[in-house]
Image 1 (cartoon, one colour):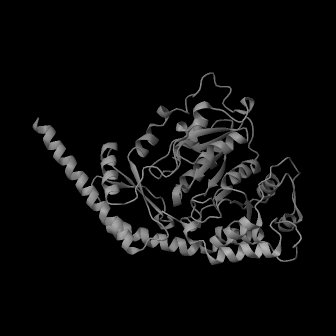
Image 2 (cartoon, one colour):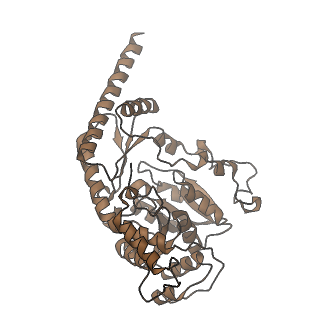
Image 3 (cartoon, one colour):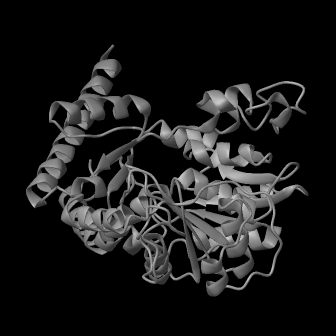
Length: 414
């Protein structure tokens, strides 16, 4: 597919070399220290302005950002966090690392958390929930935020794959209590690794800084927002100036990347049109979709397999999964372990996997993912590429339907 990593060039080199010329790869001090703002500080300022939050904090990865966000919210042992069962590894493991228990929720046709699950899964131990804006599409935020407010729990927006996406005119990451973004290699913009924590809450910002910097709250942050809390034992998730330099150059490319991908997706949708017996992924706010991955639902797994085979024969990249699998299928969930037996939040269950962590507990999610297919679009694609993909989809689906019809006639004649 190829997203921001395909565009790494002069701008990234210039900013990275500026860091080396200054001889200060650490954001807070060094032999080249001076009055000029560093790359991390500049990235945070520009990112917060674009996302529409008061604060942004650079960290080492999207996974680190999740741990920092959870720590900022005070999540710990005995707490529960609702997590969509269909989401990236970190959504589950970050909660376990904090000593809390991830509670798995079904998804709906948006491929995001089903808002109805919040009331069903909330207990006296539930402190927060994660809403994952999956592959460039904002989840059903009106319904999710209303359900979370009714349940009295905090909302973490996982925007790892959706920097630049919007929901009803508002950037994702500006709507929940705290949000995270990722700059890992397969994200829409990348620095190889790196992440951002964003929030409008001054208290959460201070705690996020402390969580990311060994409990400290340095003068740089004090000038932005005077400290009101106390130090606590934090981790070390500080973003380096070199990572920030590449991320900043990529971030400045984001508007042009999004505009290009959206134009490609619009062309693809027009090319394909409405296909009988096939449904599109439900997108709560279509105008805010980043456009780099289009999902289709087929009637059943058999026709999905035939369709994928036909597309592969035409040289079209189409996959059922793009690196994401249900948590119940992952080894860390199947065995319920943490880094130490005593640290596992599942130790109290007499048998494992317990109800709520088994494949059979998620029939609606299974029914969706067993008949879906993803059509990716890359930043290097042009109109001719999209036209070829669209024509191939129409031809492949027509052939599949014709084959299914012939089989049905043959079966009826027996």
